[in-house]
Image (tube, rainbow, N blue to C red; front, top):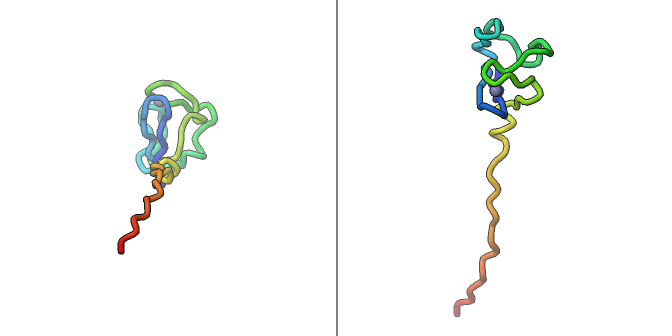
Length: 73
Ligand SMILES: [Zn+2]
């Protein structure tokens, strides 16, 4: 079970909860939602949703500056 986020309005579709607003029962996989299912908040299609797991995987990129080597005697 996972959570899918709307890229437009940040509505979250939780597979464990479903979406009562759009008649989706709890436990419905995002993949098995009807093709014409849309975000209940902003009306965008499924294509505009991203898995939260995927989003979490994107860790912020930290540019590691090469440390100036200080030579100590
Ligand atoms: Zn939305």
